Image 1 (tube, rainbow, N blue to C red):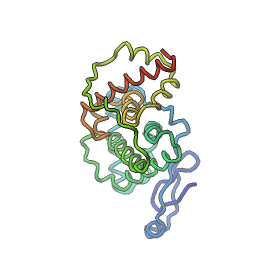
Image 2: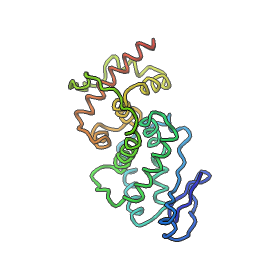
Image 3: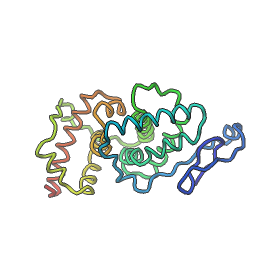
Image 4: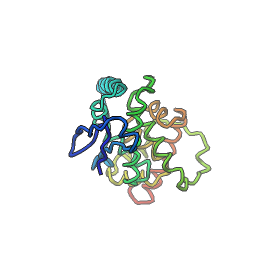
Length: 239
């Protein structure tokens, strides 16, 4: 259901329409928030490899729109959403364990936070990184009441990501859907770094900022995730 919010973007019929203007007091009284449509195929969406120039150009546009959002430009938030909705919702969906209803709520929370706190963006990272960080925090906040993933004692062992291995090449030959199902069987910590590294194609330093953990830890998790994926593929007879 679409909820109208004064001076806020509203997703309706595939584009942003103008919200009902009833004055700022109406929002304070009702607590209404804008609703954002989750992409239909976001679960399989992939950012793919993006050229450095394209990333720079996109981030420049993001920064312009974020500045406009600070000034209350609701259309700027719509443009920002359009550029990142597929990859961001796919990330949220996997982080929440494919609970689409919960993922949609997290998406709403994330975009409302962007709207309300755009002025807090410090500019040290890409806007995309900042938005993903918000999305991850919102998702984990909603998941706190759920039973956590079991702790693997082996996860304490420091591992180094030495780059592609024969196992990586075998995994790369797997059908996309088969690989996706294997990733979903991993603990959340491993699942998140693989989605960001292999599906969204983000560099380690950016993943580190999103997950708020050191780059070395990200590399270790990627290494453990590769081993775990290989074992799962072997168990399933896929390699």
